Amino acid sequence: MGILYESVMQQKRNVLIRRLAELNISKAQSGKSIHDCDYEELKYELVLASFREIDAEAAQNNWF
Image (cartoon, rainbow, N blue to C red; front, side, top):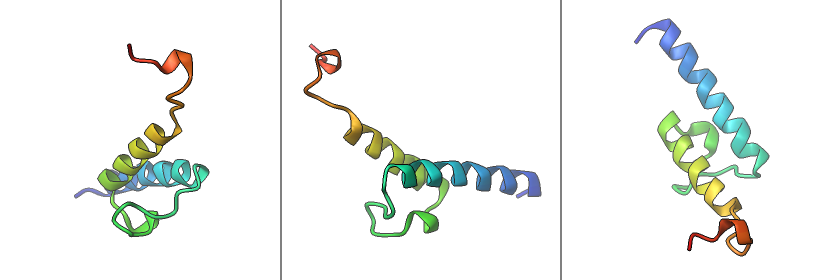
């Protein structure tokens, strides 16, 4: 792969790692450190973390 692609992917990984760290997540569901995960694993972990942050009891979050 090209140098530019690798650089951009590393920056994208760093953004996801930073956002996960803000949510106090340091390990993925697989048990690996978030610093060892690839981009796709980090995206998956961020989606799971965002679902955990949703307050299901709040009125504006009712789906029906």
